[in-house]
Image (cartoon, rainbow over all chains, first blue to last red; front, side, top):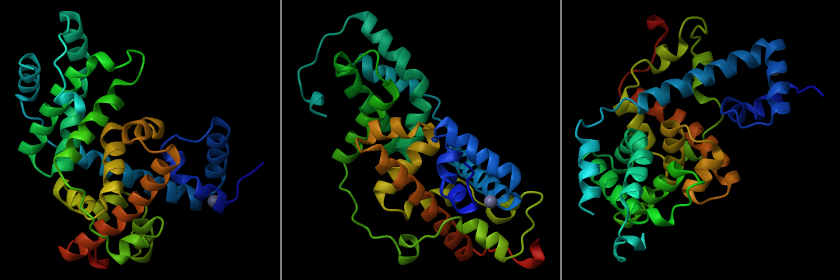
Length: 76
Length: 201
Ligand SMILES: [Zn+2]
């Protein structure tokens, strides 16, 4: 079984999140190897997701967070 | 969480150290998630602290072979919603109908080169504030799953356990949240004049 572009595209988010079955992951990968159009779009989407994820992680953690939490627990 | 007002269970020292050992590694994630939910660092810190105390008092109910991270984030979310009314804000029409791969299509339409770093061209100025603002325009049930997945990298199954919704709901909300987020980012970029022009490419 081979996937066409549409079928591949429908699986993009699940593929990028590694939430497809091993067989489906392989089918999508196979399509991407042979299809530059889909590969470019997947690559772009992956870059966007990575950028957004990294940006959202860009928050300083308060130095005393752990201490505050552990103190609160020991007083609980 | 009823446990907060329930009787305090006296815990053995081993329980305390078990609890701390499980909690410590996820505190940074919990803080980032809490700040995104509350949109405020101090409120985020308080939320993490309150959730930690509630979790500690309920720790005897935690099944040791289950997922601590999902369990803790569930408590954190409950605590958040208890102190806050859900906003019934409707997203803009553009967000509701957000198409697939919006930024990619914009990049193509503007003729941005796909070599190099098209994301930097289109989202180069997307700092924490901008992404936060874009996320803030999404309905809350979409924000909570998108931020949870972005920050904690939980699987769909773990997100489902944390949010207490079916895995299919996680999947559809997450995918839709990402579509909305791309449109939302683009709208903000335009409003702030970040709009990439042909000359800047
Ligand atoms: Zn294709």
